Length: 592
Ligand code: ADP
Image (cartoon, rainbow, N blue to C red; front, side):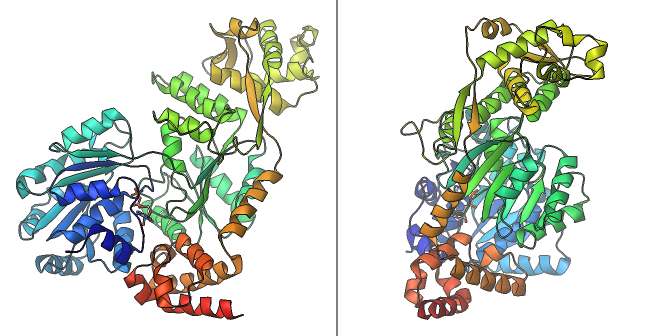
């Protein structure tokens, strides 16, 4: 009998299992229910795909998004795996053909959305085929405690009775909290499941926080016209503005937000997936299940509201395991806007969550460690050496005295003004509004005249984030003291801030990667070949080969079939289907 690891080698072209994969696969093969919790990009799909290939019959995969099923099925078919989907957008002819393939035992994996389980015609079809396994992707959608609850997920459990005992159920999710885990087990009625929770660390991601008063300029520095990136913004308006700016600068960018019509959304998503426009600017509406494995950078143009959202979105970079970056831009304005929003709403935990997020932005310690600690995971050692803080891109400066001066000014102004006015007084500006109120007579007028507006606003926002000032007021946010303010005023506590040291450092780090990893000229040639094949097939380029596979080709320079098979992500089917033009290009390159 074929073993799981043989399938991993021959179909997928991967050498080793990642942590947890073997355990979950073995559990399913032994007929056990399982629950796999792994971060985005951790490799959950393989955990049900391999058992599906080893067990008799068809595995039923319940997945939330119809739009993604096609990609998943395309990817599997390119590996030589018999996969299909059934959804509401299919015409009668395609449905009948798929039903025929299913009845005649020619489908190993069938993808459906949970809504389908309510269709009597579909259940009738299920009754005629042998189901080997039910895998539930994005299983947290079944829990009301998770962020993406979908009532239709609750119908999955009716399959238990319908299919009878003996069919293992497997749930997979990237949501880590214990409460959601327990709820999934209960709602899916998993029977003494084998649970595997993988580490949330993503070693191939470089984390950085960039404090910037000119985000557009910073964004241009960060992006590369040939590399796929996602830029998350906080509002629809910002999404459109940033995208327009990038397009003007010549970047192949598109955008996505909840205000677009469904056709516009899918056109934009396709442009991104097919690399026609590899840069996507979006709100957080864009994301769940986005499977593009070669996203090299995720930039948060605005600070998100909490760490869970941040890590989930940032995790969409580098799913293929190649070096990638998660960059967070933050400015004082973000903290102020978010604080004001939260002050207005009445979500009890929102404030604490925002404080954690602000803490991440301003910490001087290892960013990876801070993230993992948030998810209750301890990292080996104190620092990762692979984030902007560990890399010495930042320095920590003490701002206690500046903050005391600001607080004193807020106090003398009667706690009746907003950030802009307080900043103007501290800088000693000569404006009509100041003269009208005789604020130039205050002892704090002009005491921070040497600092920029941005510097002062950064300090104010930090104090708001840390709870030393609060944004009060009904229609206009004014700065007021809190119970904690005296601690800082009296110097019982100190405040520090992280500043970017120099900008050249980052570029040199990228250079390191490039020289160490691959020959760029060959990489570019191979990319073009891949694009040509993908266009001809009408499929996204990553279905042919991932970036990681191309990089590995450039490093290993295989000139015959056997060597080509040792490339990451090259299995027998891919060698047979796509190998030739790539091998030829490498042979030519080597003989030059
Ligand atoms: P997710 O957990 O987000 O569903 P995927 O299953 O999509 O992650 O896997 C992410 C990427 O990692 C895919 O390109 C997949 O082929 C690759 N991958 C999965 N398992 C392995 C492995 N054992 N070795 C190398 N790459 C792997």
